[in-house]
Amino acid sequence: MKPKILIVDDRPENLYSLECMLADDDREIIKASSGEEALKIAFQEDLSLILLDVQMPEMDGFEVASMLKSTKRTRKIPIVFVTAISKEKKYMIQGLEEGAMDYLFKPLDIDITRAKVNTLLQFYAQQKEIEIKNQELNALNEEKNYFLGMASHDLRNPLGNILTLSSIIAQEAGDKLPEEHRNYLSIIDSTSRQMLELLNKLLDVSRIESGDTHPVFKKFFIHDLILSCIGENQPYALRKAIHLDYSIADGIPEVNGDQQQLSQVLSNLISNAVKFSYANTTVEITAEQNESEIIVSVSDQGQGIPDSEQKYLFQAFTKTSVRSTAGESSTGLGLSIARKLIESHQGRIWVKSTAGKGSVFSFSIPLMPAGKVASGQD
Ligand SMILES: Nc1ncnc2c1ncn2[C@@H]1O[C@H](COP(=O)(O)OP(=O)(O)OP(=O)(O)O)[C@@H](O)[C@H]1O
Ligand SMILES: [Mg+2]
Image 1 (cartoon, rainbow, N blue to C red):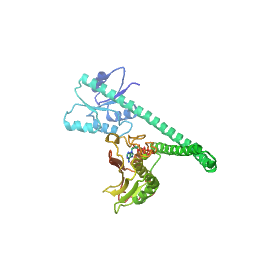
Image 2: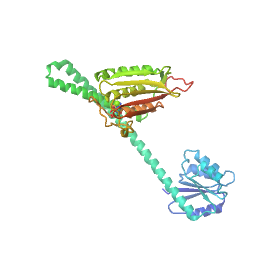
Image 3: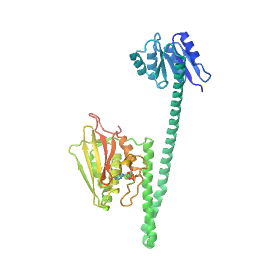
């Protein structure tokens, strides 16, 4: 399709000379002799560029531009003001603020006019191409999320069957089996559990990416969240002889957030701290408050993370060179899920870590704005 250029001027002789200057088989030129007519055409046609006279009776070029910029359909069309008046800075700035991309000064120089028009047409064509590519990418991404969700969901049932049936065999016939076969059963059990955990995380990623996990905001005490996550991770920490400790600053008000989602975040941070630390160390969970947020941190005396690898930590499927200390499994999804969940709470998540010394992972949740009632969906 040929690009369409709209030229707007109240004087027919100006329109005529501009048309002659820009005429080309590869483009279509449309003329308007007033601001009103220009707006009407701009809302009907797919324009690639508008050359707009500034001084026109009734509606001047600045007004036309500001209306075009305030409407979604016409917002992105490049506008060039054509003006005789002044090259005065204040007029130029006003024009640029109204959304002009450039200026042309009368009397028009043919070469400059043509060169500007060609460049802006190219610019607009590239913008359109990027927009189309973005739409295609979004559609592909949605398809990927759909597939990821379906595949993880559908694989969970057969995996559940494998787990149940192998545990029935272990319980009812385990003592009749040779030790080697009992070992096989226990490998089936642990591998299936790892797979189930991975599928659940993939399902989380697909739900989060397709925007399906809106936090359900309710008020609760950070104390409860911390104690329940410590309870959840305590057996694991004990097995590795790692001590879980906590300290909560006095007077922290209730948090407004989705307790289940925040518990998933904190639990991943604690389990990471345990996973990447050695025996006889301490993992400490703290909560404090500044003027606008509550900050929860998990610090460990583990291996720390090399500086160069820290920037990738919150991306999906990122595993650093730091390995778990007791052969625990690692899918590299926990922190990316945590980041998405914290962002949906308008919070922040970050890390401070020194290789060989340990890491402090922190996240923040904004304090409830004064007077806001936290009940149900926000
Ligand atoms: N406290 C920590 N100390 C050292 N390295 C860490 C720590 N926490 C995370 N990492 C590094 O960051 C990587 C990503 O962590 P993330 O929680 O996303 O995934 P994971 O723990 O490997 O797997 P999972 O999906 O089961 O959580 C880990 O594989 C590890 O290399
Ligand atoms: Mg993890």
